Amino acid sequence: MGGNNRGRPKSADPKVKFDNVRLKTTTMFDIKMIAEELGINESTLVQTILENEMPKYKKLLNLEDF
Image 1 (cartoon, rainbow, N blue to C red):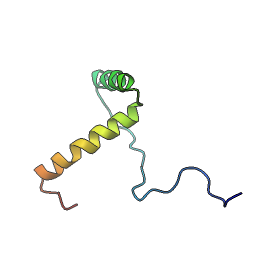
Image 2: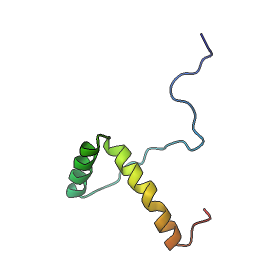
Image 3: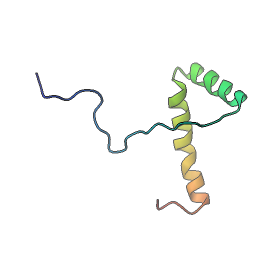
């Protein structure tokens, strides 16, 4: 057998859990509905939305170099 590697491979940009985020009930329903239609889980949908929107806010706040 090859080595003691177990689980997922290490990433250069590891994920962290984002706890205690409060969303409106209607927003949660929208997330669930859209994720189901796309065939992905809610976490992946929210992560994708945030990653796509973040550059806009960084540009707006002149934080593009961070």
